[in-house]
Amino acid sequence: MPRTIAVDCPGCPPIRALTFDTLGLIKVVEARRVDGNQGNVSSPKVVERWGEPNLSNCILAASIDDRRIDPLLALARKSGLIEVINPLNGDIRVSAKSDVGSDDDSVVGIHLFRRERSESSSSRSRTLLTTTTKGAATLRSLELADSSAHSSISDSLKTWRVCSSGDVSCSAVDGSECYALYGGKGVEVNVWDLEKCDKIWTAKSPPKDSLGIFTPTWFTSATFLCKDDSRKIVAGTNNHQVRLYDIASQRRPVISFDFREASIKAVTADLDGNTVYFGTGSGDLASADMRTGQIGYNLSYERKLLGCFIGKCSGSIRSIVRHPELPIIASCGPVILGLDSYLRLWNTKTRQLLSEVFLKQHLNVVLVDSNFEDEGRTPYAVTEAPSNEEHEVIQNLDGEVEDGHVLPVKRKNASKDNNQNKLKPKKKNKKRVQAEGDGRCSPFFSCSTAY
Image (cartoon, rainbow, N blue to C red; front, top):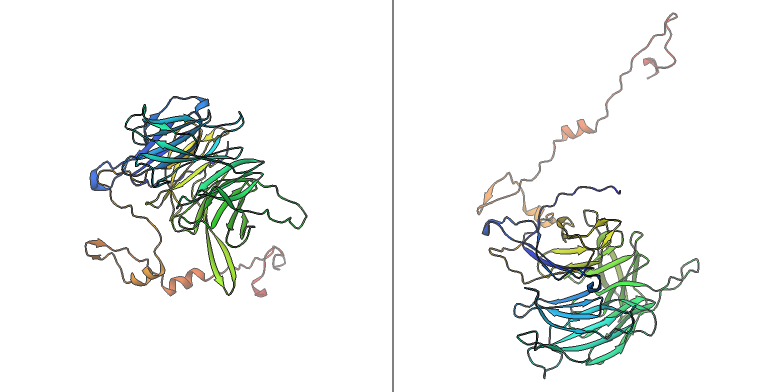
């Protein structure tokens, strides 16, 4: 058994998360306030479970539109079934069979559009994008009604082939929902225009290394770096590399760095448009800051690894999601050698583990409900180190109270005398040892006359 380190979890704010596992179960995890406005929050726990365990109903991908009015959740199962359910109570709104070509082909990516694709569509009509392992991308229209009997999924509006060979393993849609990216094993990262269904950019493999060794193409995860900018793409590879692509600059990655020794399994972007979070197959979770600056006529890119998150995950990390309001990310993964199957919540500022929930099954996807409202919910205060400006403002504070708030006490510096005493080395005891008999010094000890 591997060694584990116990980490104190300070708890998390009120939050609602949905997890999807290999048995087709959907588990709702919530953390609520227990004392109204007192600020005490209960530990996250499973409050609802939807579905019956069945290996053929394994959930491979999920997408949520958590609007306040009529929210929807789209699922893609291993059996080829596509379901659209209500994320508040688990009721199935509409379901249909996907166009899966063979047994080894399955849906690997699904996206439920938040906006209407056409002006002529009604307010109860939605659009769904699905992608299979063999590269078949399909746009479908959902006609929703008050009851599931009258709801339906129409035939595919548009269909195109993402790749002619290889297997697609990751896909993503930008914030404007106008572009989509794809990548996989033997499939270079490529970007498509969803309005015209045309490929607008394809990545180029990095050159051979100094030994003449060429690394095969194998992308395991990818996302857009900025919500409002579809030109920058961050992708993770099976060769434990994180790459940054700028489609307006060049086809090869502008940044490529290795992280540990395990493959990158999940990548997600932060709200600031600069930070990315990525997890590996061995349970390592880290964040990196990628910024672009312009010097003269050349673009200068630099990458800064912010650090790893505190608390070791025993299994692989398959899914990472960033909360759109709170400074929290959630991660989950399957069981490896009988370990993990935890849903973990992390603080993005301090990179500290806030809470964890054991969910028994192999987890594939995790999503958060950004419109979850708890009674007496107050803004979540992030604990982080004060900046240099705050250090300059906070002076001569000995626990004084200003405006009803207790100011922090600044640690006093030790006096110079104490510092000198601490740094001053201790003198060795120099003893004169006389040898027995002739009164000469012992050869095993130094005589005082030698100093």
